[in-house]
Every structure is written in structure tokens, then in C-alpha cells.
Amino acid sequence: MLRLSAIVAACLLAVNANAALFEDDEARRAILDLRQKVDVSQQRSTEELKRINEDNAQLRRSLLDLSNQIEALRNEMATMRGQNEQLTKGVADMQRNQKDLSQGVEERLRKVEPTKVTVDGREFGAEPAEKQEFEAALATLRKGEFAGAQTGFTTFVKRYPQSGYKSSALFWLANAQYALRDYRSAVTNFRALVSADPEHLRAPEALLSMANCQVELKDTKAARKSLEDLVKAYPQSEAASVGKERLAKLK
Image (cartoon, rainbow, N blue to C red; front, side, top):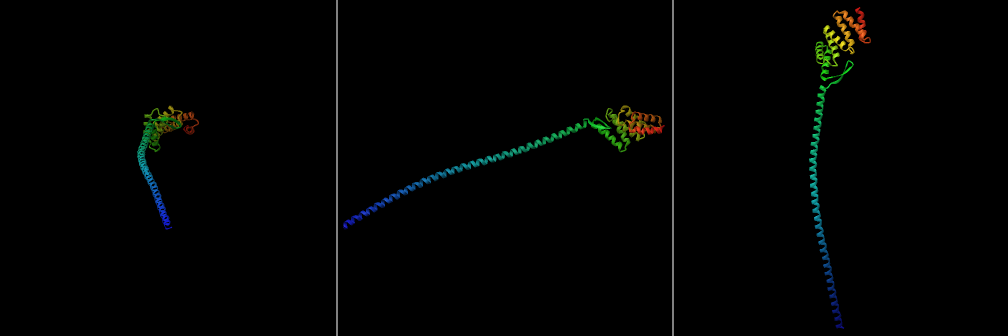
């Protein structure tokens, strides 16, 4: 029995030892497998990290290229903006010069081109200088400067013998002479107006004023003749109504 017990005990020890040995092998294999998995995982992580780093480096390069392109575009836009401003300024300068040139041309044309004027109910063309001289002489007469007006109108008639102003200029010249008591010269110019332009608006007044000058010259016969001509030629005029009254006083 003791021997059998010893044999059984020995068998049990052998079995336990084999079991422990088996368990150690399994544990080693499990550890090796786990280590292998960890190594594979680390390798994959390393490769993934390397790929990520490469991607990040590529992204940084792309961002740098994009930043350079943006800066280049900004510089190009600044250059274009400067060119556009310069072009705009050039266009504005050209337009201003063109406007100044046009105004200068128009001003020169205004100084030489005839313009339409209306005097004593008549419309005609007159040169700017011609218009200016007539109006200056008339303004002098209206200020009561009769000698200056006489000079102005005399010069005007000589300088512009074909002017549309001529009949009006003769009328006002004669009035200036009447005011200066140069009755003979006044009669001459009143008569010149009536003879050359009997349809003129001032013709009836010229005949009446001529009769007044003749009265001042004590030439009653000539004055009566002038008044009779006035009443006959312009019976509906206001001057004819006045002429009739004066004609009655001369008889």
C-alpha cells in the first residue's frame, strides 16, 4: 500500500509538472503573439505617423505656395490699381484739356462769327465787335454823354456801312447832334435814314425830329414840308398825330 501510494504520488507530481510546463508554453506563445501584434501595431502606427507627417509637410508646402500666389495676386492687383488710377487721371486730364480746347474754340468763334440780333423790330446778323460798338455808343448816349455818343455813332457808320444797325445808328447819331444843337448835321442824318430806309421803325420819328431841327433853324417852310411828308407817309403812326398838331401851329 505504501508503495502504491508512493507511485500514485509520483504520478500526480509528474502530471502537475507537465501541466505547469504546458501552461508556461501557452503563456509564452500568448506573450509572443501579443508582442508580435504590438510590433505590427507599432509598425503600422509608425508608418501612419510617417504618412501623416508627409501629408502635413505636403499641406504646408501647398499652403506656402497658396500664400505666395495670394501675395503675388495682391502685388499684381496693386500694380493694376496704380495703372488704373494713372489711366483714370490721364483720361480726366484729356477730357479737361478737350473741354478747355472746345471752350477756347467756341470763345474764338463767338468773337468772329455773326450772331442774330434784333434792333428796332428787325432781326439780322452782326459780328460780335459790330454789336459791341453799337451798344457802347448807345450806352454813352443814354448816359447823356452826347459828344461821346456822336463820335461813337459816326465811327460806327463809317466802319460798318452795310450794317443792319446802320439806320438805327443814323437815328441815334442825329439825336445826339440835336442834343448838341448841331441841327444841320442832325437834319442831314435824319433825312439819310428816311431816304435810305423809309420802312424803318424809326422813320416817322426821324421826320418829326427833322421838322423840330428845322424849326430851331427858323426854316418854317422846310419844317412844314417835313411834317406834311410825315402825315402823308405814316398816317397811323404816333409821330403823325404829333405832327398834325405841330403842323396846325405852323399855319
